[in-house]
Image: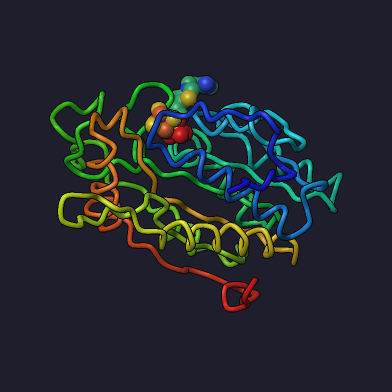
Length: 262
Ligand SMILES: Cc1ncc(C[n+]2csc(CCOP(=O)(O)OP(=O)(O)O)c2C)c(N)n1
Ligand code: SF4
């Protein structure tokens, strides 16, 4: 079978993410969505920090590197001078909700027509797995060897719920991007439901921006390397723990884009 070359991907792009990580999958969905919506030529990615920044190696689109956590501010500036551009960022949970939370809230609160795709692996991945604002109670990380103690550090930050408290965002959704393992006798298969839902959310978020609204999607993904788990166990953890702590759902869809078949 011949694999279709996506216009937004460099022809010889090689995946340099850790095996089992869904960061690469998310970039592929973004490239597919840009092509489906016919907006590849107008797309500008704003890189922030963390593993998502490796996107510049794959995506053959305009790319601006922001300082750590500042992607929403840079996106706002780009949109001001280039209103026709389709501007998006892929931010990790550490980037978006720790270092850059203020930027995110202000862009969302102003309803700036840009898109934030937030990859929530519940740790600071690129730097070795330190506790993030999203690390659940009891989760062992590099900086919480006895498990996160919310008495000390406060409870995790629920970004979709937080942004839902603002009136201006137009699209807010949380999905699981990690495929669910299904044990079939002596083999493990992976469900395609998560990929379908994640792709749909990417398309809806970009459509919302095209209609003039701010859009935000949180993807529950894995970081098997820093979680110190096998790939299979990390997928199970995403469904048994992450998705229970952070229930997936549609929090807002002002323009009704989710109900329209793409
Ligand atoms: C101002 C500044 N502080 C700290 C860093 C170091 N740093 C690089 S990546 C990263 C963590 C990113 O974690 P996250 O945003 O959750 O993304 P992930 O890699 O897990 O996808 C940090 C703290 C930096 N690059 N710049
Ligand atoms: S460090 Fe974690 S988030 Fe980064 S590429 Fe590897 S598995 Fe993915």
